[in-house]
Image 1 (cartoon, rainbow, N blue to C red):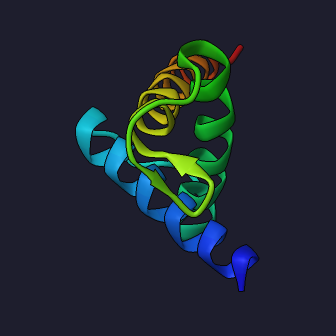
Image 2 (image 1 turned 180 degrees about the horizontal axis):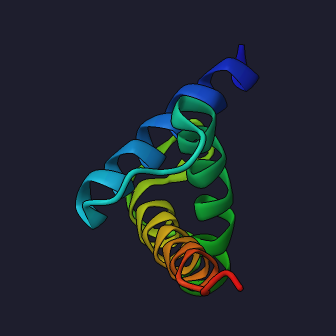
Length: 86
């Protein structure tokens, strides 16, 4: 049951981060879940463990980490998509 909660909370955090950034996350629901889980890890590394905790996710560091992750991914996709094809 803990794994199911991790997927749900990770998906919600990824979705919220996408809304805040105003960008679609590639991969839809799976992309939201991955962004939320990786963002949680990144936020924990950058900001530590503080704030409300839901299913092993600290909400604020997870959300900030997911926002940073989405920003980095959007920069990478923009640079790859912006190359001219010769």
